[in-house]
Image (tube, rainbow, N blue to C red; front, side, top):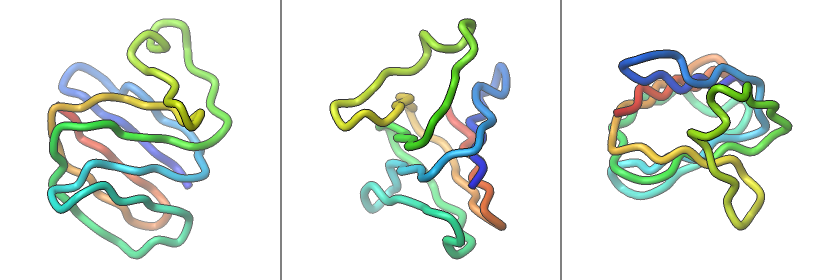
Length: 92
């Protein structure tokens, strides 16, 4: 599946991944390939990405690696759209 993290300043990440978990308004949820289409409001928390991702040096400092080895990006809130194996996170 493909994931994009978009901030007001730029497209922070655009990559092929195995899964992505987001902090939804009713709790964290995860999407894998062929997940049903969804639009969700996101709350403050971490977007967690699983997969072999090589980050450009200019954005690597924006991300952390969690205890479980997944790439993490902290958001203050936002919106998620998932459709046709593409997740777009519009993050604050």
